[in-house]
Length: 307
Image 1 (cartoon, rainbow, N blue to C red):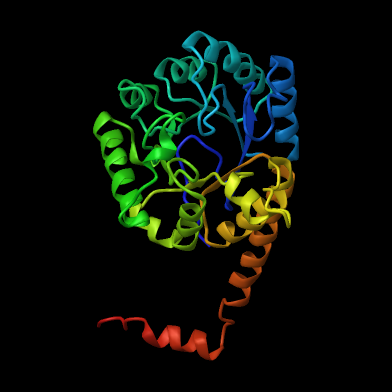
Image 2 (image 1 turned 60 degrees about the horizontal axis):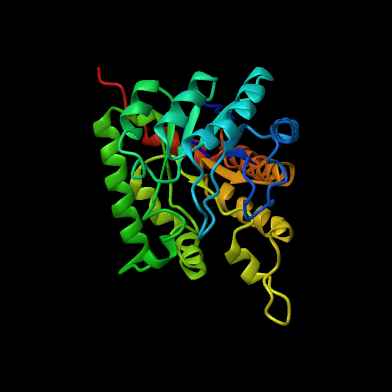
């Protein structure tokens, strides 16, 4: 199985695992557990030890309805974790919609800018990233967290997401972001209902029309909580959605997705390794042995030398 390579980032020959470090007081998944700088760094290092290829540090919650922190506050939250993780040798991504934060994080050693707005929240972002010369995740986006769920209406979900995301990619390319540094993200949960998320997963192969590596972020999201609801209809809490996340990672890895953004790194990395082992064994098993009928037919199909 072939996995795409993004310039400046690890290329492990399998689905890449991105670990999440939320340096926020109001994240839906961990409720501010890693908000303190020391706690954020400790958590990031633990994710690296568990097998994260990239650690994604974010200082702004993007859960539905969340309010934005000030620029100064986002910088205060993010930079100590980025600096500490880079000093420890980690490959670091910064999860931000602000060009100023992207610049400061890259100056501190970050190698990827993960922008959930795809350049639409900050008019300076795309040119900034192009000038920084780092990899860029361009996500499908229709508005900030406080209003995005009111925009979850589509004529044809996958066609609309593909078209809108393609427009965002076009703007990134026009701003000077190199094609080999671009990653796309369909934006699961962003201006999308739970049913929209399932439809995107069911029709995931159609997103290949974008022709770029894809990052998928479904870890612990509310549509999994609804799927796993208790008999009385109470959705399962975020911390109880990791097994379902691992199941989706397995499916996506089998489809050759470039990367998954997850909270529970070790279990998801284990799933990716199982898929890699199985697909590697299958590739070896499918290689024709010398002298076999398949090998003979391959030789017969080759053009003969002239003269």
